[in-house]
Figure 1 (cartoon, rainbow, N blue to C red):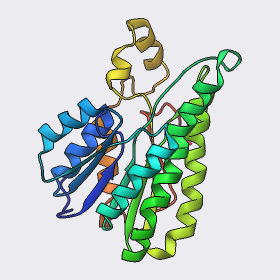
Figure 2 (tube, rainbow, N blue to C red; figure 1 turned 45 degrees about the vertical axis):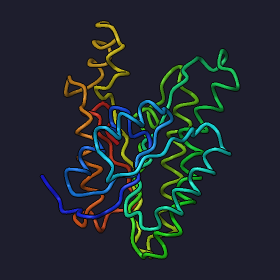
Figure 3 (tube, helix red, strand yellow; figure 1 turned 90 degrees about the vertical axis):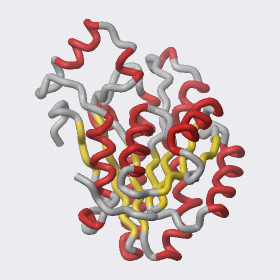
Figure 4 (cartoon, rainbow, N blue to C red; figure 1 turned 180 degrees about the vertical axis):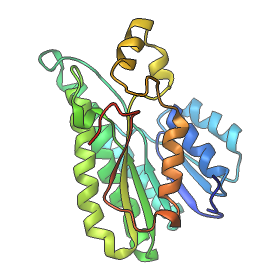
Length: 246
C-alpha cells in the first residue's frame, strides 16, 4: 500500500543496514526526503549513490557521546522541520554475563539506548514547535523474552520500551506520536551468518516457521508514520511470526 507523505522529512539512523535500507526505500517511494545517518563513511557514500543529492547524509558514531552531540546539533540546525524520526541504529556485543567486559556492556547501552535519549532530546523541540511529529524506535523480541548471552542487548532494548512510553505520555497533547516496533528474527546480513542448525533451532521457536523480512518492519514503520495511525501512541508492535505473543 502506498501513502502520501510528499515533502515530509524523515530522519533514519542506521540507514545503511538491512532494516535501515528498507526504511529508506519505503519512505522515498512514498515521497519523503531522507536524512540518513551511518557510522561508516563508505556506507554513507553508497547511500548517496543510491538516493542522490536531494537527500541528506551524516556520519555519526553513536558510541561516542561528544561526537553524537556535535552531529545532532548540526542536524537540528540544518533541519528544524523533521516530521518523522526512526531510531533504527543498533549493535550487538554478545557474551555471557560473567565473561562480558565493561566495554561490551557500555558500547551496546550507548548505541542502542543512550543515543535515543540524545537524538530525541535534540529533535523533539522542533516537533513541539511545529505541533506535529512521529517518533519510532526499534526494539527486539528478546527485550521481553530475554536471551542467553545478550544481557547488554536485552537491557538496552527493554529500556527503549519503557523510555518511549514515558516520552509518549509527555508529548501526547502536542500532537506527537511515539511508538516502538519489536522485530523477531528478520532476514538480514546478521542472520545470513547463521549455519543450518542455528537457523533450524530458531525456526522451531517460530509458529509461522519462517524468518521475517525487512519489509515487514519498514511497512509497519511507514503505516505508523501516516495519518492512518493518528490515534496510536505509546505502543509496542511485535513482529515475530508468533514467537512471542504478549
